[in-house]
Image (cartoon, rainbow, N blue to C red; front, side, top):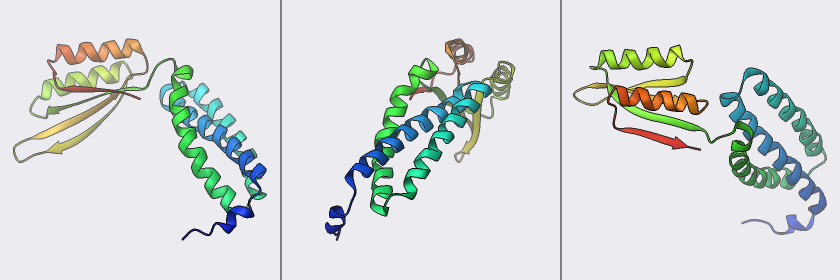
Length: 171
């Protein structure tokens, strides 16, 4: 059982201060992580530096906190902060994070080659994982466009190669 007497010993002003600082850090970290994937190297580096610079303030605050404040504050801040960071991220990258997912049989060698060469040529991020059933081996694609131009290129590429069963996700 949880000992409720521990709540009597909590410095609630320090708890709120810590939660607010940690909440800001989690939001910054979420946006920094997204910018690492979607932004340029320079923007990503600056965002990361600012984020971890701010985190030193959070760490300095942790030194003066009791265990309850540190653990409970971190949990609360991460739950709220990650949600807010994902909600705010389109303001910083200009659009939601998009990915396309689809599967192609490895028997379709030309189609696989065209897709991979096009993605490489336009420097579009993608990942391929192999999967199989009892009859065939498949390539499972996950493609991550950075902007609407790449979005349209992927849509055209899938249409050109007659790939109907795709799944577009927005985060």
